[in-house]
Image (cartoon, rainbow, N blue to C red; front, side, top):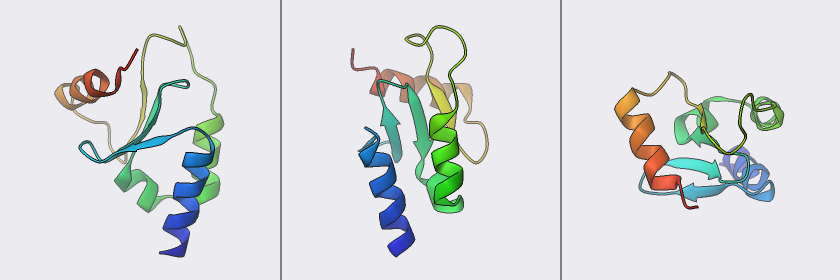
Length: 86
């Protein structure tokens, strides 16, 4: 439980918010999405490294997903629509 708290603090301290309905952490500025399962299954240093990865292409166009396995297109689109707040 302590490690999960430190992971949550790491994400929230970097501008990520948790979406309970989709069970993801997301940051509209970086347009990155981390699934709860990915967070549970990876060490804080690996999560931090993914948070620091540069985005390719137009920074405002596409969300980048960090899931244990790539989400189906329908799930990806639903999450993008739900998180696209502006």
